[in-house]
Length: 315
Image 1 (cartoon, rainbow, N blue to C red):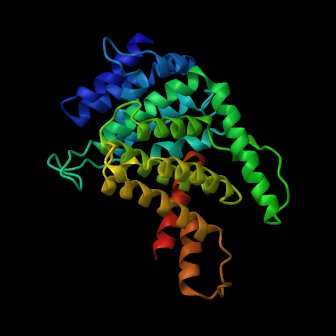
Image 2 (spheres, rainbow, N blue to C red):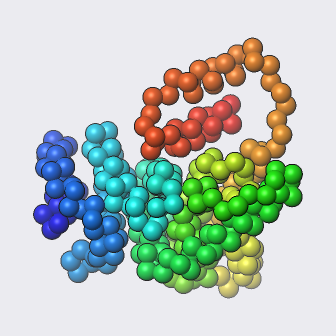
């Protein structure tokens, strides 16, 4: 176990891609030992730092590494977390959480609307996701109950729209980790924990990407819209910015509200009845051909469909 973690984490400090690939190839021979210790990887910290082994795996995943190395890292994260309490309900949901992570880095001198320093989105979201996973693994039942309640409320909305009542289906629900992140985001807006103002915007952007992806694995957008209502309530509760009592400027809060509004508008458009399009429409034929020609593994299906739908939506 210790040898496996040393090999994994040492990839981050390699001088070249070839060295990293060689180390990662060595990792494959000891990978089975890691799969039995997902709880340790999520909870144990490295050395004197407050960063877990999972934090370093996520950090390695978002780096601009060769495709083969990124794929091996994604497969390892999938193996570690898919059978955990976080994603045992639907292992195929995990890629949506990974794909929503930011990959680009802001310019070092990037400034906010009030000339404040902007945090590194990538580092911020890795740290937030790592911390939320620890919270959820520590007290899973609390967040599971909230996730079930949200799902049943969304099912009631479906029945109201004439789609018929639907019982609880674990594979259609979101991970209890979503409830953990919503709770964490609410705390950030209140200043607990104290994070830079732009960190709240980074979390809002991540949640927008994530909830859009989660909505695609469900029969309708009611679940995601319920989550959006929770976000709107949180943002509306942070109304001290107008009086200058909040650490969040009015412009920063406007950016956060914009992320929530964009998500809601997109979900409503996805759920709205569409006009019938003739099958000889060239755009429809091109889109269907692209779907039929997809060659993807089952674990990458949701993220690939998400990319196609976003492309079609923009067009």
